[in-house]
Length: 434
Image (cartoon, rainbow, N blue to C red; front, side, top):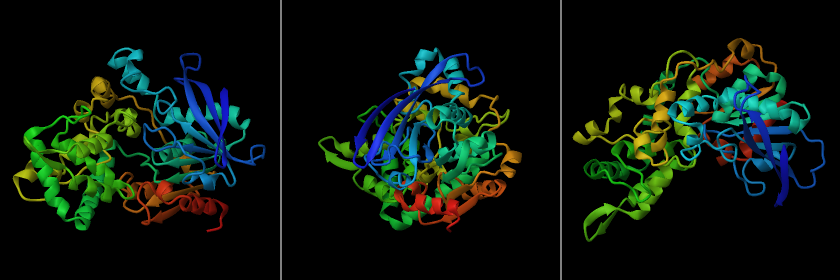
């Protein structure tokens, strides 16, 4: 383990790097590097504080890069020493992307490599480094979104490593196939779109006009992204976050400019769309997004794309042939994304092989969860666009002793948007104060 220590306002930070096996079942084989950032409040550097491990949402995102005591971190530092882990393949932890994956070989070798980047391997990484970090003492884990999926796996496989488990917007279905996840998702997304159009009725005509333009021109944006109608619809991913509806509205209102050649998409619109839709910064989200639901011999087989066919109201061509509102989509990965996005094109075949894979191991142990003794709490966001509320509550009932806080005050990003209040409420629940 190597370290480097420095300061920001109110915080002492230590960068830590660890070596762990790529495949924990074969510890003698290849090893990869993990990166994590320790944070402790100034003045408490030498205090004997309990550890809190943070697992970011995703998959595919590194841990937050805070400045000082931003967001929920300030609340956590009141009584914890915090470890912000970049999960394998993300951030500075042996990043996996179009530039690095060719080091593995061809698409088959890349897919075999990425099969080790799910919650099971992430939790084993946590257990592999816990001894070095805490001296063997258990820690509290805070899992946001996909980090909550990892936390649920932690409770299933290594509860002895935990003093407590805190989940925000991330209780997974324990036995549902990816198809079940997306059959539940499309109606939620439709409700979010309806709420957006109710708030901004002028966007109905704007979205249709943009879609009609794209159907005729299929432009390539300034950054190389090929903007099809389906890609435009996927801007609905914004609707799952705090302020996302407002952001989508402002994006749509400045889509066009008049030029000597006629009406064209504005540079500002192109820049914002490319930044929103590109997976350059988090390619693992696209590559293993459906694999995080794989638990049996059935392949995921581009589940979101197949299930979308069961909801014809999302078919843009049919919408444009009539006079109804265009429905946006979100929180789903589709094969055409690997054609549109220059960050994903080189790994299209790798993604196909992952979608066809049939040897996924089970991620959760219902019997062990039913006998859970680790104090556990979870924030469940009412009508969360990213994680189905009914699935989350079913899982909550299956975990012995888990207490839930169900709220419609926040969207999926409540830990960020409601900080530090959300974390304060959950920690109070752990103490039994509420």
